[in-house]
Length: 160
Image (cartoon, rainbow, N blue to C red; front, side, top):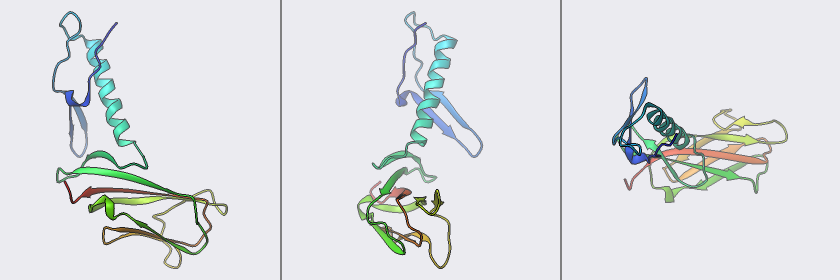
């Protein structure tokens, strides 16, 4: 059995509060100019796989992951920090080059010798906090020793 692969321009993703529906924009005929159920299922499965892969892509490169409710592209970037991590440190990352208009999500994980990991959105008023200042700087204050820190930011851009 043979089927034709499609690219994302052949799929329309419709999402509301409860469902995600994928519709083929263009029918992809098989060799005999018919669209079989098995090839349609394969196309739908590939479309679902592509959609999930885009949503699950965590990269240190800026990645477009979808659209925000206002229709603007939604971006994600992951920062991995492994150097210069000492106890009682304020970590500041300059993110002005991302041209952030609206921060949608900011969180991450810290790994260390005193614990397996801790979520960065854990808040302890004396020691730990994570925030975006003026859409240009991510600050993270932490108390415990760390071997690795991952910060994930999702945002829209002023340039879109």
